[in-house]
Figure 1 (tube, rainbow, N blue to C red):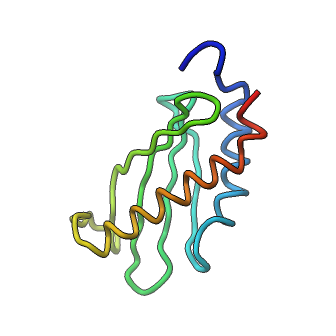
Figure 2: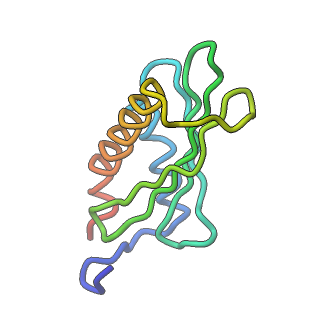
Length: 115
């Protein structure tokens, strides 16, 4: 991250904005929880629980590369508390969809993150 384009918002405020905004970008019934990434002051941990009977949970890490751009990592996918192989076509489609929602949320929050 360059010093000229660095996040100026606190991680606590960032978590609050993400928590309130992300739900608006998800499909009805999906739920998200956003927490601070204690290992990275420019990062967030996002858990998305998919609507429906499959009881799927997706764990993402979101790191701000600069005040506008994010990098997203997938750390885990679980069904009923058990890790599952995320390489199936159905899960890959959901992962792509959730990544898009995370990027949309970051774009919406640019007035807060871009100085």
